[in-house]
Structure formats: C-alpha cells, structure tokens
Length: 440
Image (cartoon, rainbow, N blue to C red):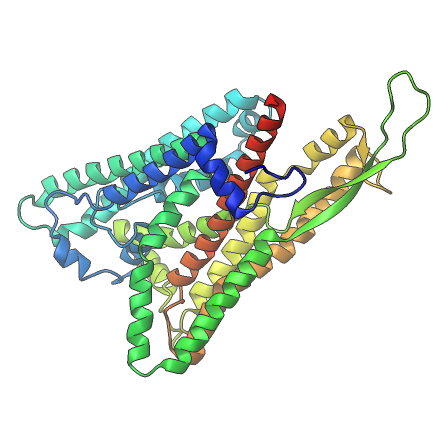
C-alpha cells in the first residue's frame, strides 16, 4: 500500500506500515511484549501472603483501592506499587527543579548530559520513595500473612519484593519510552487500568440487575459524554499565524511571504496532570498508614471518594472532587511551564526568520506566547478538572457510583493515553513514509 504524502495515515495504512516496516514493527513488538510482561508480573504473588483473603478486601480503602486500579486488580503481586513511586519521584524532582537553581541549570543549560543526570537522580528518588511505600504497604499486608512468614521477616521480605518490583516496572517503562511506542509510564498505567475494566462492567451489570436501570443509563451517557469531552480537550489547540520571508540566493527580489501556523495545545501536559493529581491524592493515605498521625488519617478520610460532609446533603465525594479539580488545574499550569518554554520558542522563531504578525521578535514574542499559553491552560485545565468531578455530581443525584472517584480517574487516563499513543504511532508512520521517499 502506498501512503499519500499530504495527509495523515489511515488505520489501514498504519497497520500496513507496522507489518512491512522493520523498525516500526520492532518498536510495536517491544511495547506489546513489555506490557505483557507487566501483566504477568502483576500475578507473581508476594511470598507468605494469603492472596484469597486479600482479594476479599479489594476496594476496602483508598490505599488498597488506588493500588487495585493501578495494578489491574492484583495488589498482592510483586508489581503492586506499579509505576506510582516513579510518578511521585517525578513530581518531587520537578518541584525541586523549579526551586533549586543547580537543578534548573542541569535541565536547561547542560543539554542531554544534564537531562541524563536529572533522570538518574529521579531514579534514586524513586528508589527511596518506593522503599517507603513498600514499607507502608507491607505493614498493611502483614494482616494477610498465611503463616509461612511472620512478623519482621514478612515485613522485610515483602518490602524488598515490592521495592524490587517497582524498580523493574520503572525500568520497563523507560525501555518502552526509549525503544517502543508512546510514553512508558502512561502505557503501564493504561494497560493495568484496562485489565480492571471487566470488574467495572460487572459492577454496572450487577447494579442494572437490582432495578437501577435509569441511573445506569444516565451513568453510561455521562461516560460517553466524558470521552467526547476528553477528546475535545486533548485535541484542542490555538493556531498562531506566523510569516517568513524567503530570499533566493543571489537574487535581490524577496519572494512573497509564506504564512503558516504555530499550534499551541489546549492542554500542553496531555494526560500527565491527571496522573500527577491522582498520585498526590494518594499521598495522605500512604503517610497516614505509615505514621498513624491523626491529622493525616483525617485528611485521608476527607479525601476519600465516599466521604460525606456531616449535615450537608448531596455532599458525598465533594471534598475529594474539589481537591481533585484544583490539583488537576494546578498541575496543568505546572506541567505547561515545563513542557512549553515561550522564551525558547521566541528565540527559535527569530533564528528561523519567522515572526508573528503585529508582534516584535524577541522578548515581545515571548511575552505574547506566554499570555496565549496561560489563557489556553486556564481554559483547558478548568475543563479537564470539571470533567473529573462530573461523576461526583452524577453520584449525588443518582446514587450510582460506578464512575465516581477512581473510576473517573481511570476513564480520563485511558482516553488521554490512547490519544497520545495513537498520535505517536501516527508520527512514526509518517516518519517511515518520508524515509521511504528519501531511499527512492
């Protein structure tokens, strides 16, 4: 099949390229193989654990509930912590990079070597944070020990198994990012959430069988509307008109200005603000289980999707929902500041002899782009946050909690990661197309 040069590849063309192009086929097979390994590892059980007893407690709290979602319903496996330690470490490092000049210099001024050094520091932070989360989870799991291992031996062995599993998952995600298709961390979460979808469908069917037909219909309609809204937010962009004057070498006359566009996405960070917000909501439960501090325990309770404000009707999950909204909103701005640098963009435009009509090159262009990006992020972050709390509204009025809390998080991540991965696959197909043209 011959690919058309002037348009994006169709599904058929993409599948054909995957089969016929060796490099693209290798990347896809690496991605699928490593994701399969993640799923297999999720069912390698922790030694000394009574898995059947633990399975009966799934969804019994925010800690076990979130782990169940992000590990595909298998929180008793050695991969139980999944990619969460790495995500938390990434959040910590990004905050430190913004606060510490030395780390900021590594990121901005030392090129690829600096970024590699930052990545290595992030891995060490992930190791430390993973060890802490593993210890917390081990203390929780000791109540499910089967007697083969007990006391301190069970806690130490379980902590080592969980920490090792988290590091293996992080390593696999980095290989996917480097040698596969898509963002490894996002795809690891995606495949684990996908594995838990049958359980969600069973819950929907079970509620429908109890006579809650209308609430289920409303829930399904809301879910479909959320998918459409997420696609709209992920695909939305502002096209900034730019012009460039082209001169022919040795010719005095200037060719007519050629106008093109600089696209700026509505959500620069893609699905990452959602993932980061979910990880932040998980922190109080982690620390509360580790320290037993009354303030942290109360905070973890308030941030539960099922918490109801005493004396306030229709308030179930609203503390969670509002906190989730503001976290997504804040991380949208934070991640946009990391992904898009208006100063660098303005400098690159100036070097290429490109300008925005009516805006002076240099600092004026940087200020203009910064304002546009902030306005886009304000709209996109607000919209993304509102989508996240819609299930709380549905639950308040219908009593059906299939999409509430973690279910909404799963849906947001699934759609967002699917869109981003499809785009990267499409980009790879286009790259293969032009490589074929060059060989010809």
